[in-house]
Length: 461
Image (tube, rainbow, N blue to C red; front, side):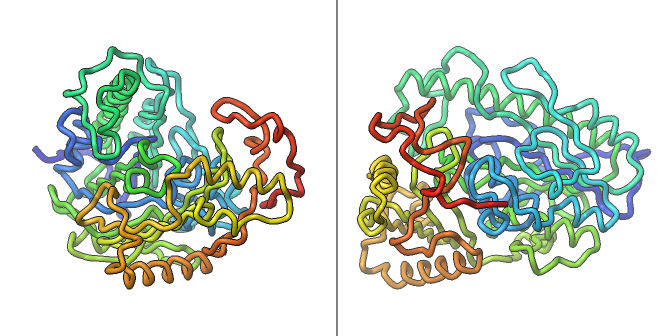
């Protein structure tokens, strides 16, 4: 049964826009994406009533960088937030400015994790509220009241803390009632994995309960000129990596009378495309400083295409388990190329004259010693990226084409790296230094507190 909006709902000339963002959920873990063991009825409802995107991407599988690109239309390297807990550059504009200038009220309801406030200048911001579970809830009462009383077109980002850990403490499900994939099949009989995955499933269900309530408010208070998008900021199984299980996000859009119900698109889209899409919907012209393109043509025709490639970034500094292991990736619909720039294969080319800096480069490379310098995957044949073709000579041409495109993109983005071994900076992140032990990071005694501030690259913005 399709969505039914009440007849007395407020009519709007410009579309209202709602973007619901879950936190740390794999694309694979939804009914509409093929997992029959997990309960996601609200997302599945949106899928039946709208369009499911198979190839939607974030550029970075970590919270703040993913959200910054979603809200600015710029990749993390360009907007500055390519390290978790980092700030966006102060001269970057966000959706609050772009849509505010077009007459919209722009609202954040829930988790933020982006800064500074001068860039993300919300007209209204409601924090999350205490709920019944281990994470905070979205502010449902405020959302409902706003829908009921709104006077002008609005764009609302509803940002959940679920299903991000810590998860609900529930009994372990048996392995045959949980979905496993080639990248985690080896953990199927691990008791800790079963317990954690069971709690994760329960947290996914909690998020769907909240989403269902929002959808009910939409149907009661708003008209059918409302675009509703559901996504999750990145996958949890590929967090901190540039593999598809981290970057290929769920993305479902419903817009009655515009999007044909029950459709699926395999077009490449990206989080940087969200802002330009909203600008076009609001009647504005997309500005050249954003990286993304409007996917409005795809919403109207699932066969439309807007990208040949999308890109990704990995930065393992600025997190609890910090290490020096950056990577960059480029992906077409068929192929994916990754270059890990501090791989053990090229480590010696990154060494300089500072012995302490070299020691931390060595730690980073060996922490990920099984990850090669180059990876190439035929995604159509190998969607879970299990068979690395980088050293198969029959793929040399495609590998070189992708490598050249990737380096060009890095240059355009103002990347701190060149795309080749030889320069590997330690990045100044005072909250999570490389030379201090803490939870998730054990530093050898001989290297504790050995780095000076001048040993780091300082990104001062």
